Length: 136
Image 1 (cartoon, rainbow, N blue to C red):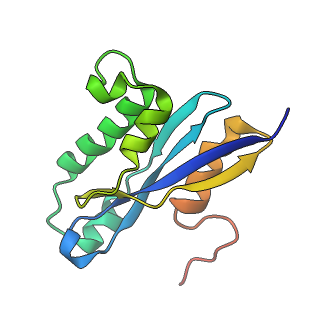
Image 2: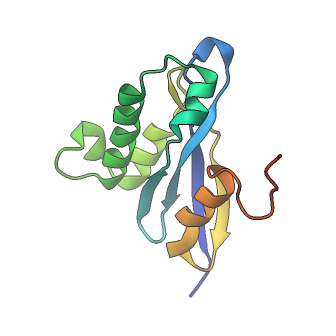
């Protein structure tokens, strides 16, 4: 299989925007050559509460669910979900100052496009991932 070029951005929960502290909670991946637009979300409530014990986790989950819905497109995804996949990716990764923010867009390449999302979640979101020792 030829190498696939993809773009991705890390989804961040920023419970107190004025403090600029965040927790990585997911990844959005776009691969034009395969038509892939997908979000992987793994919210760790304890990590987010460490930044703000009073964070509204239900509201946070609803916003994160909306990202995944827009990535899937189709019925129920609203006017943004009706856009072509690349336009949805650009809309989702636009800079904003809210409880949900995304990193700058990065580019990668893979010989196994089906594994891109899982690999990025492992490297960018999950705590205690392989190769990194947990303190204690």
